[in-house]
Length: 129
Image (cartoon, rainbow, N blue to C red; front, top):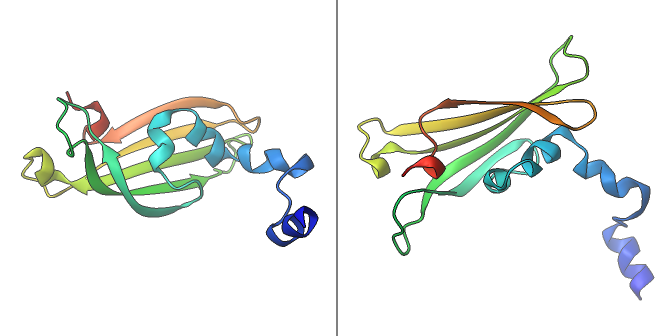
């Protein structure tokens, strides 16, 4: 029965097991717990963005949209650039601008090491004090 189940759902062990983990997106995502809210593959989805600041029961996340992108620039020595972007309604922070975003852009070597992280956009809700 177990053998039949493994055949139906697809075997996830063996030599191919590390393949998914070694992708640039997986390596960048695993570099910090901050990135757990982002899609594990290129794409976008609704998310709950954790916020910093004083504890307020039931109010520690902000609804948002989280996206993951990846590209391998030409002449970049096999490195990849992975970006995680979160977007949220700025009015939740009493900001007059409606749509805010924050992006983390990481350079990942062909060997899977994150060697550079750059941030841009509004202050990430996670960093609010």
